[in-house]
Amino acid sequence: MFKKRHVLSMREFSREEIDSVLDMAQTLEPYARGKRSDMLAGKILALLFFEPSTRTRMSFETAMKRLGGGVINLGPAEGSSISKGESLADTVRVIGGYADALVIRHPKEGSARLASEFSPVPVLNAGDGAGHHPTQTLLDLYTIKKEQGRIDDLEIALVGDLKYGRTVHSLAYALSLYGADVTLVSPPTLRMPESIRTDLSGKGTRVREVCDLGKVVNNVDVLYMTRIQRERFPDPQEYNKVARSYRLTPQFLAGARKNLIIMHPLPRVDEISPDVDGTPHARYFQQSFYGVTVRMALLKMLIGGGA
Amino acid sequence: MTTLTTAAAKTEAIEKSSIDAKIDAKDDKDEPRELRVKPIKSGTVIDHIAGGQALNVLKILGIAGTTDATVSVVMNVESSKLGKKDIVKVEDRELLEDEVNRIALIAPAASINIIRDYMVIDKHIVDLPSEIVGVVRCQNPNCISNTTEPIKSRMLVKAKNPVLLRCIFCEQPLTDRIAEYLI
Figure: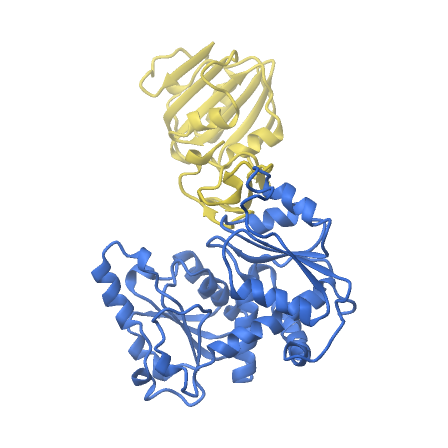
């Protein structure tokens, strides 16, 4: 099902395919925790990051090394073929000849799809501008499944910048495959784009929109927080007002369901108070760890033997 | 020669038994006869273009202001189907199916009449292909297709009337103002 395919957008995944990745991730989790493996021995993964990245780049690198494979890096653009004006198409053709798979992050939307058309090996999209970041969505789904025991029929709130946040766009789409009940919590200026809301409703997902975070916390199983970026607001005072009202503190959680989990794609700035970290609801650091597990699963399925 | 005929120029002569009269009369029985233009001997007549879109149709066909082709354009004539419609006649050129199907981007109800010796020898309604390559630019300025990469723009046709396109690279939809993004 997965051999030699590209991983570009969640829209290309069926529910069955997502489930197969999550099942593989479950199988590989002990290796993510340190159990030795040579499943990808002799294989090379190329990391082409044209934008800064910490956790995505390092978790791909960790995933490959935990499975016994090797990693090559593009390195800084300065002094490379990129600074000499080489096209992305040529870059992936060349580096695709060195490696068994490519991971790409690039500031332009659609860049991963372009790379897939020129690359001789599978391409994994690690973020293309404001476009897609499918491995983030898969690790989000894995986190929900691990921590809640299921994804189906959960009540999930997506909070913060729902207009520009690529993470929540992909996640909302994926949740629609599981019949989740989705509440969108954002300031009016950062609402989820209508095209995505229409898409969700069209798939039968129950969607509602609210502005007040306080009214939602007690009625959901998953609170997915995102960062509201200062640069989205021309008026700093307006930003401060909004950012304050979307800052999650332990006081918000007094009446929360016992099983509530709080997630965040990280890095956080001040949208989750550090006081929340010690509550039984916080899961964002586990979520980050699961990124390694899920990326191991994808690499194993794309370039490993079997599955 | 390029002849522009507008609704204002209602007094253009017509021939009673013209092939164009047959084309028009069949589709728009209530259309005033004085709005029609002279028939062509051979070439292509594109009828039922949404009112005001004729010049964009010419753009799609690659017919610029300096063309040698003999082209007649009728704009904003009354139509029972469309309210207002445009008509384009290109003489001595039979448009290929691929060319005319692009017209459906901005005129999904357009009909194509191929004329030989004053006779309509082929007539069909435009139909967009499932994918449009190199015709419409993505409206997203940050899309990789709007760079110097060695690729052509590619749009999936998600709906035909009204037209809804989706960029194959960045997945951004394009539905309004398609004419502005014609390459």
